[in-house]
Length: 638
Image 1 (cartoon, rainbow, N blue to C red):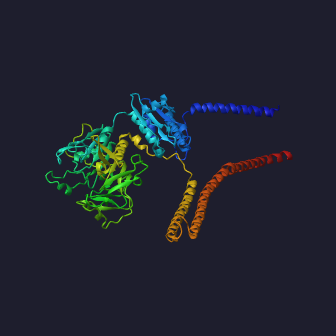
Image 2: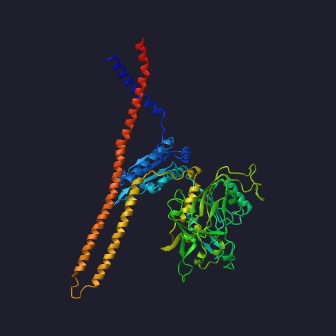
Image 3: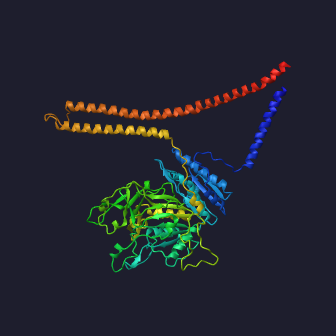
């Protein structure tokens, strides 16, 4: 063995040892380091989630139940299951041991299956055979607290991080959030002076009392919002005393979260009614008046204007004797009018409103204004007076001209704001010793506001029935879910609220989808052509049948009828062949695109890399030869 080969072998051994040593070193020194190279940063944890993980004071056990064998025929579902598992593993790796992840594949009639049922994860039957799929997450804390996500819906993939972070936050903070209710409407149980009887609570209020600790506040005596209150639910503020406005103002500046409902016409407002004169309620002022608060927060709300919408107006009956008519002021919003990128409105199907107002940010307000509910473009603003004593809703169409603008009916508002009381507390308000009034936000304003209070009312979203003597409510709209989603979102930590919808993992083949859409359009056109020819032929046959000679039997066809049937059969075969050609063309286009991609990945890209490598090698060789040539010439001369 020559000296050069010995040196080459020694160099290879040294490189191998160096590579192994560096690998071990990097595993120890760079443990936990990760680089997310995905286009949508799918594996990059949001800062709010990281802060929630850092705030964990005790270990939390997570149980991810997933049956991969049930997804053999559903590759997209299997891929999403892998995505969820990898995300949970990423959270566990970043939790400094505070999250203990257990991945479980429940087998039929096993202890793991019983454990899943005990923790609240239910199987979902999929496929024609009804195979049971477990695809959920459960968690427990040290105090036997439990929380679960029954099923990871692929349609809500963009909220995967929010749902998991919310579960972790609930386990780390098991105490029920406190909601302070300051309402100008009688939405809770109590005595009704108009009827002289006890009134039932609105369904929304009853549901909120089950999920939260609800404290009722009195505007007449309110001078300070207790710091223990997590969310202030402000319903139909009207004639609020300055002291109550100041208390709300300071709560907002401290970073308190507010869910507000205002309305140009609050149908349930009976504050101006005379118990001895029921008709007085029809003429009383039912508009909300939030005082200086909205103006200071940079929100415009006109209590004298109502959004009328020709597209979303619902059909109503004003009396049993009158026919149903479309009411431009009673709206049934669908999913297209809801912000599907916000956790409060995502996944909701329909929300009903009545005589709702509109909201918009003031110019140069310095706030972030995100619409949650919007009208269609077939909307316009009508004076609230037109809805007073309205007996015929069809009259709202008189002179109605849509503006083409989408009006915001509900919005999320955040940002730094100033106080509505720059001159100090109003008369009668005394601050605790050593405490000074805030003049600007310590934490950003966190507000969700609706320009409608009737969205809370039962008649717009539930029907009541009797079941064995029990009064049962059945929801036919998503109003209740919307309100509870808003409370639930605001009651979480500011870190949790900051975890909004993320990009989805699924990346569709856009070119393939475009080809499929074009082919389907052509297919539908041919299908329509076939239906038209079939209808024309049937009409022709009916006509021939009526002209059949009376001397022929009922089952005997004339020569003309027979010829027409044969022509139709041939025509049908021709059109079916064209339909097959369209489908074949779709398959050929997709196959041709796939072959092109394969050829590009297998041949073209490696060839380009090879040519670039050869070019670099040739350039380096020429450069080396050019550097050696002067030295060689000098040696010859010597």
